[in-house]
Length: 292
Ligand code: NAD
Image (cartoon, rainbow, N blue to C red; front, side, top):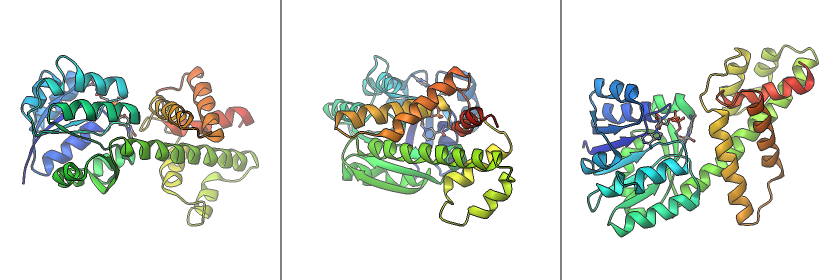
């Protein structure tokens, strides 16, 4: 059955996710600071709102897909934010990748107004957002999760309640360690092969069905072979995530020696003017080191 859904943040990920919700028969009200992207959604059948508050006034479920913690905080708690307009019983689903601390704080504020909240970040990037096959990792209360689960399946293939508030975004932090260290390991291997004079494309074909094969390898090697570094998942976004990873880990006493190296690689790529490029650009850091 179609629900009334609000969608705030219609960027690389939010736009295809909201289009999939409309395809599934839901009535959407949308808001973004970028008027062009709002226009493309209204052309596809969505209603435009002028603020997050107005979105919330018209929706039983309000989804946010925003860059970082501060944007989500503004959208939820601001004067013209979601909690200023949400009806009692509404559910906010924050699908952005933010800190567990922020997720827990916002869920507590929402609860004071009788509004449910889930943290439900995603993995799979733009291609899976377009296909509606994202991996969605959820934190929050089970009854709230069950009440919106079909809507999450309209955007994702695997939807998993990991635990209470903050557990979804914590799982996403762990996911980002695995994804980015995979890209770094793959980059070391590709640069070794290239400098040793091996045809890198043939090497990729030779190894991809073995133990080194992975979703990361299949997503990023073809991009690297095409020299396509258009984000996708930008260095900026992944740097934000790995910074959140380090802060969270240090607070609870977990040293992460390899992830700290990633941050240095990201800083080097930033200095090199590649901050908005795809995180597959990690290979260009290694190419420079080895003069490939
Ligand atoms: P994006 O920068 O493409 O889109 C963000 C959108 O939010 C923009 O359209 C921007 O105008 C809008 N916005 C910013 N502040 C706003 C505000 N206060 N009110 C309304 N709109 C506002 O980002 P993205 O790549 O779609 O990523 C969104 C989230 O998803 C991030 O937390 C990111 O870490 C996460 N994520 C991204 C990817 C990826 O591959 N790009 C994959 C998984 C998860």
